[in-house]
Image (cartoon, one colour):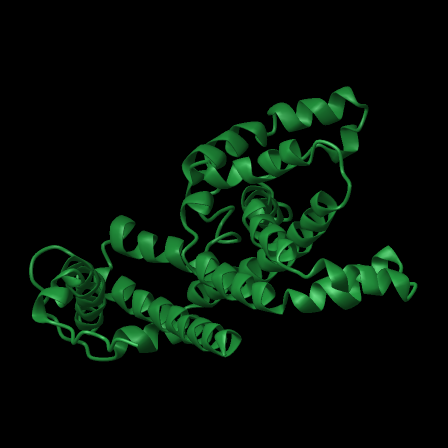
Length: 291
């Protein structure tokens, strides 16, 4: 067998554009954020008022930060759990002898490719007190169920979660659908011969065989939830009050609306550290699954 050719300098040049993007933009931006977080800075001009770790001490005592962090984590847990459950159920449904399975695949996945700004704006119009959903409920005689869905603190956060689930369940469905297609059909036949019901087949054969897909979707779902901004910003703006505020929205408010760029940089570093934990987890899970 022929040996591998040693890598020459020209071979590394192919990776240069990606390295410039990752190191020069992303890593440099994180380093700059860490630097600015040590100053009481408005974001205009050069930072001069050095405060050290005061911004980090401030966020530990900031109730809105803790609420935004809690909202972000609750949003991540709820959306990931619902999307995985619905995605797996739909994938199993499509893989059975269901008519129009191609149409079903398309309908489930279409929301994923829509721009979040389009989805958020459409739902904001639909869910206003005099919007289409309330008109539909009233026309069906369900007058007690019409709500100011995005303006009521009791319903706003749950509504945002459901909008996100509607848009991204198709991604979980796509991953599960592909993974189920890779399972040896002989396992299904053997389970049927042993007398397994459809429920037992799905819970004892299909679900355990999709362990890798479960882990990847959980980690990616959490990381995606940490970055979630546009849906909240374009529907509730973090309100009513701060009931739907998330970390990214709070960072935007501090830096852009209130000119607290130093404090916003400290909040950003916390968000980066949380994302780093999930990124390390993803790499380890991917490595263990490949071995």
